[in-house]
Image (cartoon, rainbow, N blue to C red; front, top):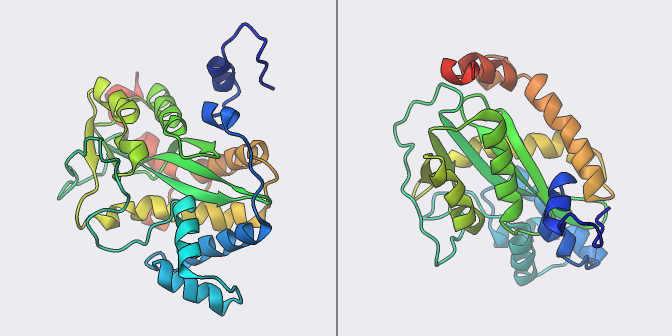
Length: 276
C-alpha cells in the first residue's frame, strides 16, 4: 500500500491510510508461539485479577499447566505494558526527562461531556502476535472519541488519536492520563498545551481513576477480541471500528441509567460546542 516512489511523503501516505508511521518502519519479527499463547493467557488473567503482580500471574499460569518462571512473566508483562492495579505511587513509569503534571480531579464533579477526557493503552492478542490499542474517552459519557492501533509503543499513535478527537469533538477542559512515557512526552502534552487544555496526571493513591477505561478494555476483549483471532492489524482495525460504533451507539450502560454513550454525550455537551 505504501509506495516509496510516490511524490507524497511516507508520513502523509501513512496518515491517509490510517497507519502508524512507526508501524511501517518497524520490521516484523516472528514471535515464538509459546510466548503468544502465554501472553494471551496472561491477558485473560490480568482482566480477571487486575491486582495480580508477576508472582501471582506466574502461579496462575502454573495452575493452568504452563511451566514458566517469574522472570519470563515479568519480561512479557513489560512487553504487554501490563501493570498490577493497586494503590501505589505510580501506575506507569514516566520517562525521567519528561515533565509530570499535577492531579486535578480530586473532589471534582464530572457530569458534562467534554469536561474531562481520559486515555490509556492496552494490549490486544492476535492469531499470531499482538498489537496495542489506545483510546480517547469522554469521562462523563464513556464515549470513545478516537482510537488507534500500533505494533509498537511509539507515542505517535497516541498523538494521532488525540489530534483526531480534538478535530472532531472540540477541546475538553481537562485531559487526564497516567504517567506513562507516551502521555508525558512533549509530543503529546504539547498538543494539549497549545489548545489551552489543562493537563492532569494520576498520582499517588489515584489508581481508581483508571476504572472507567479498564472497564472499556474488558468489554472490548470479552465482547470482541477474544471472540475473533485477528490475522493482521488491518483486520483488527476494521473489526474494532465496527465494535466501537456499536459500543457508542447501541451498547447501554447501567452506570449511565441504561443509556448509550452517544445519548449521554450529545445530551450533555455544552451548548456552545453542540451548536458549533
